[in-house]
Image 1 (cartoon, rainbow, N blue to C red):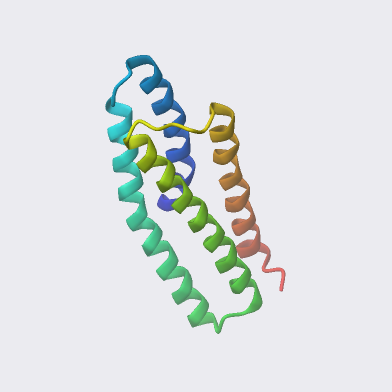
Image 2: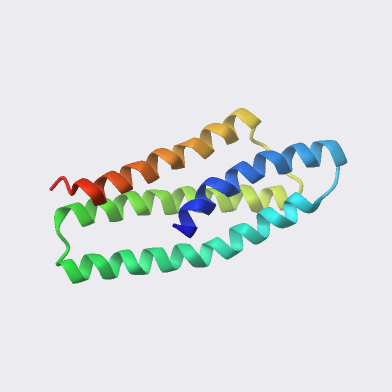
Length: 124
């Protein structure tokens, strides 16, 4: 769940970082916080992926586990895209609007809800 928390927090931090950068015109403390949070949670993501694969293996990879792993892979792609946004922001480049970043942030919520539904309901 630590990785999931960061999936929600880093895009939100980018919104506030963008506002801070617009106000200060320079790299402020929110930028440092966002970069550190992204780096720390990347390690949590590796742990989440490894334990998910281990869980699937120990259960014999039923169909619902494949769906869960596919959804987790989609969230990992979302997180990689977030990393590209963080690295661009580190250079002072904020191409995306606040609205885009807010929507981008909410997409991950639907992914997390879908994963939790699959794990609880086991539809297959």
